[in-house]
Length: 119
Image (cartoon, rainbow, N blue to C red):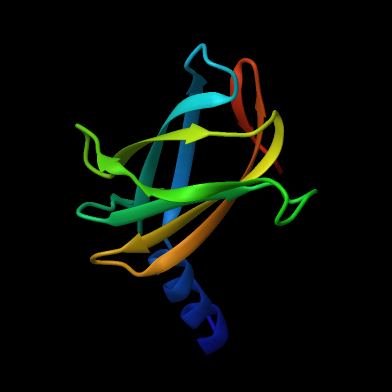
């Protein structure tokens, strides 16, 4: 393995990974969400997470005011509620503090059934 490949693998191993699951609450455009964070294959615990969202197709027109996520019952699990303005593609922004400082942007399609990650 050359030096550049080795260094890239180190950086990627340290980049937090996120898995987002959101379910509709029954109220229009409101979802209960759980994000599971890991870094290097291990749950990321004691993170301080601020969550916001906006619509990539309409920047600055539709956005969600940032709020804090609360720790879940499993390691690396955090819960929050998203109150969106409409269905469609949203960029969910996770600002991480605590043991890791980073920002992740997750693109998801929100519909009446929940949220599906955009490829």
